[in-house]
Every structure is written in C-alpha cells, then in structure tokens.
Length: 358
Image (cartoon, rainbow, N blue to C red; front, side, top):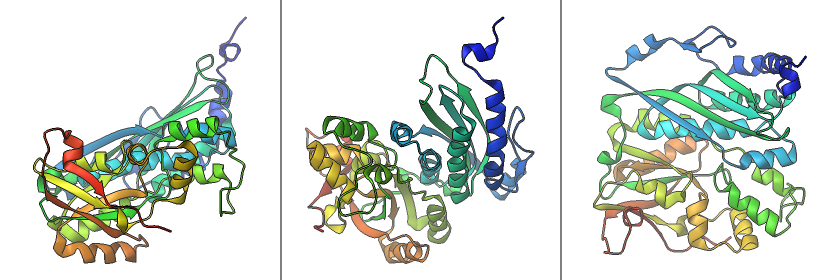
C-alpha cells in the first residue's frame, strides 16, 4: 500500500518545521495581530486603520530571484529571508504606505525541517527590522518538480497610507533633490548574471574576496538593506516636502527612477558623488560587463532614493545620519530635453559623469 510519503511528501517533516519556526515568528509580530500560526488564515485587527482619515491599502508581492541558488550552494539559509522581506516591504513604502503584515511561500523539493526553520528565521528577522508582522505562510513540498536541495521563496505584504499622504510621481517638481541611500551589496537582483560569471570564469564561492577577510560567497549572500523605517521616519518629519521614493531593484537605478518621474522632467544622477561598490567592480571586471549593462542589472551601490524639495535636502541628510544611514545628494530633477530617439525611461532618468575613484 502506498502513502503520501512514498510519493515524496513527508507530512510529519512539515509539522516538525512548523514547530521549529514558531519561536522566530513570535518575534515578528505587532499588537494588532490576533491569534497564532497554524490556522487557516492570519488575522490582523483592522481597527488599527481608524488612525487614518481615508486609508488606502497597498500590497506588494516579490521573491529573491536566483540568489536562492547561492544560498543552496553554500548551505546557508538563515539570511535569504531578510532579502525577501526587503524586496516586498520596501516596495510598499515607495508610495508612503506603512507595511502592516506579511505572508510567505516556500517551495522545496524535500522538507528538511531545520532548513525551513532557518529560512523562516531570516524572514522573521527582516519583519522585525521593518516592524511588519509575519502572520502566516505556506511550505509546499514538490517532489519530482524540484530537486531535494532546491527551493524558492516568495512573499506578499499589505500596508496602509492615508489618501492625502500618498506619494507619487505627480508630486515631483523640477529642482527636487535626489537623496541616495547606500546599498548593502547586490541585494537580490542580477544574480543570474553573477552565477553566469561564476560558472564561465570558474570562480569559487569559498575563495577569499580580494582585499577582504570574507569569502566571495559570503559577500554575495550579504542581506539586502531594509529601508522601511528610515523612509517612514522621513515621511513623518518632511511632510509634503517629501515627494516620493525610488526602490532600486531589477532594472537598475535609472529605470526604477523613471517610474516615479512625470513626463517633462528628468532625474539626473551624478556618478561622481559616490563610488561603485568593490564587489560590483570585481564581478564586472571578471565578467567583462559593460557599464551600461552593469547599471541596468545591478543597483550600482544605491538601494533607495528619496526625492525631496531642495529646501529640506540638508535636513533629510541629517535625519538619516541620526538613524545611522549615510546618505548623500546624488543628483537632481531637471526639465527634460527629449531627443526623438530617446526611449521613455532614458528620457526621464539618466546617470552622468564618472564614479568616484577609490
């Protein structure tokens, strides 16, 4: 007689994984969360929205791409969850929304309880950093579709913003200042190119990274910076002088910035105001990646941008510095000069000059 375990699905292992992750999830909560995990749905007290005059719900869904493969190759699973949270909640804050709660989805070829618990511990830690409750999730075992060591993760979050405090491209004006916030590394984008370079150039993840006491693999697994609380603090202190944010993910700095710049304007970054991260210089050199390709694939060292009125630029820098964020003035918004051959993204955002030398 056959049972589910014979088909590759271990129900007992799944239940063990749930028990192991409970302690981590308990730390990623808010006072509005009702009940614990294990039910059919996570509950969040919506009366918390009464603090808003006209609350708008915002939602975002994302994953971490093939950075999961670096984690699998190194056998290190406790940080990839932070990347997931960052990808999701920092998309919400771009429109001014406060992330409230999140759920996750983990697909595996074989449930190894300790490994699942490690992944969830990273998700919970990321939620703590963003003051976002982790109220539920799903672990799906896919024998025959994924190898026993293979996995993928995704997540979705919900936030809220008052209608009259919604941030958008409509608020951006000529003369506004672009405040850059540094990336912690590659974040969770462009890893297919990174893996291609590793494979074609025979790089070892265990080898020491140049001029560092860390291995290449450790550098590549550096968790994505989570900017949510820094951005929410700016929303509170700057008011209408804060126009919007740019979360720099897939597509790079210019293309993501173009998404929040209205027609007739162009966000212009001055590369000379910051240095390209050493890990990106290294991978570009090893893979012979051109500067345009680099800037369209990786974040070029900028993880989040605040678009602010010029009169509060210095205040913005001081406010972020007080929170430990070393931001800088990276550029400005100008009236656009559009050539007939320009595409919409390049017309609305561009990078000029050369990066700082080290």
